[in-house]
View 1 (spheres, one colour):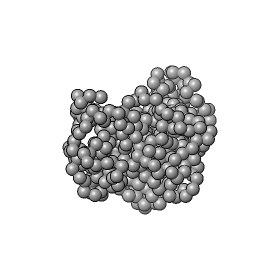
View 2 (cartoon, one colour; view 1 turned 180 degrees about the horizontal axis):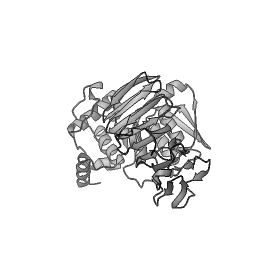
View 3 (cartoon, one colour; view 1 turned 135 degrees about the vertical axis):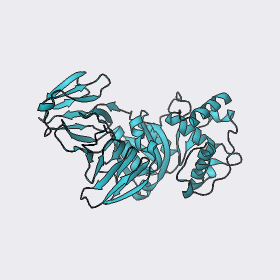
View 4 (cartoon, one colour; view 1 turned 90 degrees about the vertical axis):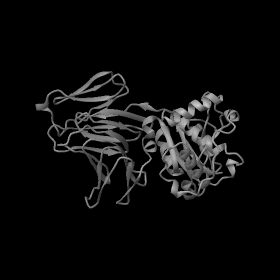
Length: 385
């Protein structure tokens, strides 16, 4: 890349037009190229503080700046030419190649490619199962006035053809396995993106119901159609989220330590299943449901919906959580060799495409020189470095 290329990339960054990898590159590049400072000598807090300074210099908001040490001055755009041949290190050690065509160097006994597919299994109220990857484009089924069809881009559509005969007591189930995602449009016009290893249960019709209730186990992003007279309610094992029309993400995997509801647009009320406690959040906020306690805090919206755009995005995320995401996406088992609690508590920053082989994701984590991995069949072992 030449100097003009970097200037163009910076202009795109400031205009909010960069890809996830370009964002990671430009932010990380500033951290690496500070005159008179060796990046490897910086503490984790100092690295994060420098990232605060980068964002401040670019006129971007960084809400957590007060949590870290006072940053040093950053000399912007030094040594432009020499940057082209360097691996860029993100946060605690995750990195990506600036040259996307650079060949990966194999370091593991075997590798596991990304098998990500936009498919799912639809189970009708009658018990009939339809594998959506095998289903042809067009009408799949009729359910008492409801037509279910599959579009050319693989989306599932529900349309009410006969309002009078539409029955609300017929519940369907859309389920994804590991490595699978899917998009569905419900009969009220609500769109739902379902993440891997997730289950969504919903009525075939909302026509005769007071509330538009659905049930979620796993993770999904919702764009709810507005209907002030019929609130949309998402029920999970531990809470209920009530909305009238909004965009939000819910992560409710049973193997996670909390249920997380992140609001991008509109307003939602999050309530515990016992009804004792509830919180209303605004766009840019999220609620963590931890041991029947609701905690409201500012949200990182890009982190919350990175899965929907095809990326892993880790922001001071502990290794155990990272490995659970890897397990769900690559359909692998993860075991720990040594002190599991110490390994699981290690935290990392970084961005990487979910289209990469699992070896590339693991090598990025290994760059932090805190852990190492081995792959045996479909089992990943986590070890101290």
